[in-house]
Image (cartoon, rainbow, N blue to C red; front, side, top):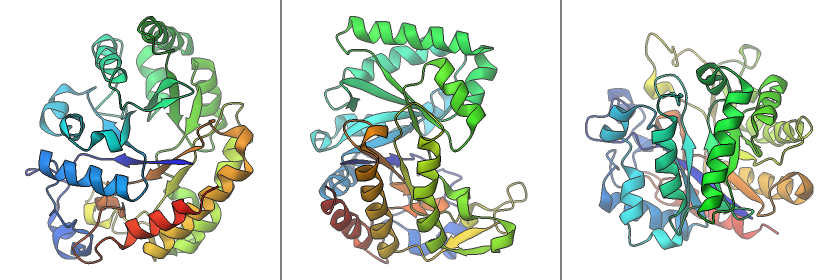
Length: 330
């Protein structure tokens, strides 16, 4: 089995993500390297830490639909490509094509040129011999390009370009949950794989109260993967949602301080979540990729409470638990 983790590069000197609340009330989440982790030296250490714990690739959140964001924050990928440790860890892209970072007909060609160049990197992740490219939103693609067919044409042209470079095409993956509408759109557009960014919502509801035991997440997530599998003809990459508690980012708009979150996130919950995924992959071989790939949300979503990064308070406990669980995979 091949586990990868989503990597969010929002941890820079002037980042609005490093809130006063995160640094005070939630200081237990602070990585051993400090809050500012987007530097060549610290990316080196993160790559080495992830690889030693059994993670096989990072899926970098890629925001270049907005060039100004790319210039200011989306630097971890560049640091990774320069890292002496990169051979120990593959990578792919999660195209964060949500509001503020849309992929459109105006920037598609520019973005796809960058993707093609990255596909040729020796450590770019291949599934069935093809580079894996993950999109965050199908709805924004439909809105930006106007029709399912217009998106399909763009996908086919990118596949042809990759094939002309002996890359065997492209495997397009979509992040979506149990939405028949989105899955139907994905199949029509020519997506090859269904996955998710996270599934935090599945056990969070007003009826469960604001504080929800993470046991409920551990219980419900494998059921969701199965429901998604039963809704699509495409293979599924299950995503393990480690946690959801974004209270450090609360403001008057998102009201995270009043919304439900999970309690009980720990090295033990990480261990059990990965065991659940091991089991699901073993039981659903015909509905997954031949490489038996799974994703983890996330390597460093510290602000949202889902992270594997070693911390000043707990050290490497979560990574050690991850490594033990991966070692038990078939």
